[in-house]
Length: 213
Image (cartoon, rainbow, N blue to C red; front, top):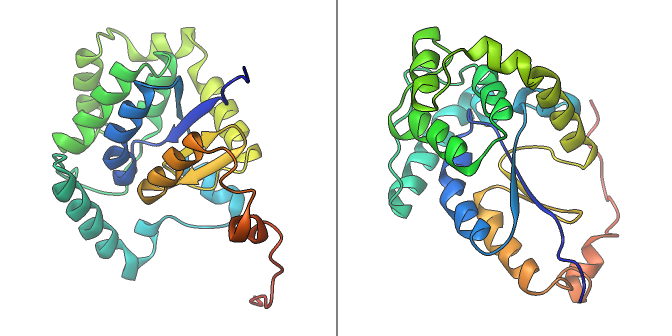
């Protein structure tokens, strides 16, 4: 029997689409081993020289409306925090220190996107820590080397080709965004999905024109 490919889900709690994807990832984790990996979206975007959709003024409201619409259509409760984008680094470090367990990840996402609370506010971060049973945030993060571990995980994600969140990595294949999850399921059912027909041709499709700076 062949060894099943490793599956990693990369996320940042600043991403509303990561919240929308979470139930599907949890369902996938009920059937396959899935590692939930916090990464710093800002560092990922900076590496590739891109920006997040909320950083483009004409795209910002569209992104918010689309995520709210998709959540409602999927029956996922969603309330945007009082400001967005917000600093998610402290939550990502907290989750890293806790081993990014499925329960901790869900608690952090529910706090942010179901309750609409912003844990970049120190009082709100303390409230989230209370929900997670963490008495001393700074002590836990320092003791677990969470700052360094999160930085290393983000660098490893970039090295693997991750360019945004949420991204599901199956073996060496990347599936970015909520709308790519059905393709990920199809790939798990048929690992040869990308090696035949037009899918195979796409891997070597030449560039026809390049935009000049």
